[in-house]
Length: 69
Image 1 (cartoon, helix red, strand yellow):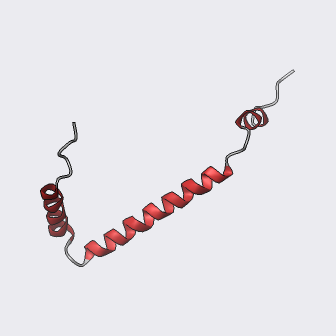
Image 2 (tube, one colour):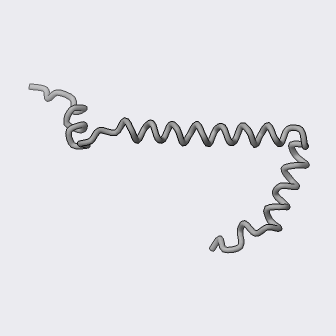
């Protein structure tokens, strides 16, 4: 379905349009911001993985509200 989506000519056209829209001075800043965003997302995902309990059933039982009598 997406076999020829990212061919080199397509990527050049996308880069050319981005250059026209944002200009040569703004493009490096956008790339830097995108890179920092991706790094932050990856580090947040890694931190989230470290927070997971070893026993998910015990966590589910602990987070259950107390039963009403």
